[in-house]
Image (tube, rainbow, N blue to C red):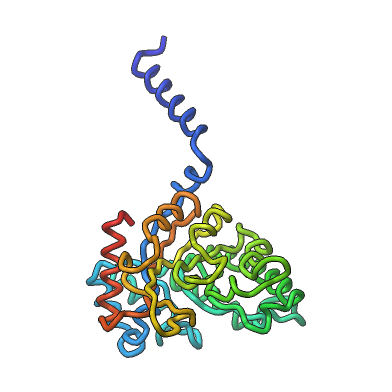
Length: 307
């Protein structure tokens, strides 16, 4: 005979299973992902160029735990090998889950039907330093309206996804503004990229600020149009400026929550619908303030918002 406590346990377990069956798949999937809040080191590019070690120490003192690089040259991150840079981060209780390295069509060797050794080293070094994502943040202008070239390059995206997967990582793409202003057939370049890449192999990093003021580049509309496709996000608020701004269309980034972007709504939608688990802050303009202080303020704002 089954005792009452055992019956209660089984009954409650059945209720949990039944409740889970009613929950949206996206929510269940989202719970399995580790949410990270970090910063793109391009935000403090000048400081990193002059004193990478000292800058990282200031960031660590400002409660920043995760960083994303934008400097991989000759197999070195900010002048350090992958092994050296990983140790620096580890000693500061920091991690680098993602990084930006531009992949071009030249990184594929057609004669060998394989990636070049240079690109293979790039992936190996990314894995060595502890990355989970290898993000390419650019698409060469010569390819943007070349339909055949684009198709081949999207195949290269998917193949790089397979290469990264073999190293325990995922390949990804980061948008600017030209993806929305460049027409490809009846749509735009951004739609072409998402429709021709395998979401299991190629992640998207949506930059909320780069598309400011560009028709077809509204973050909320894109999160709604492509649910679950944006594993990573560059969190960037914007203000209007008289000059051309960062992307050449009258906007520049500012401290999160002080601009014109509906940041809280974007972030909430990204979590609930976009499949976003990697929130990486980037601020490229500072309105006369110190970049390091700005990015630390950004992190504190996001932390107060529950990230």
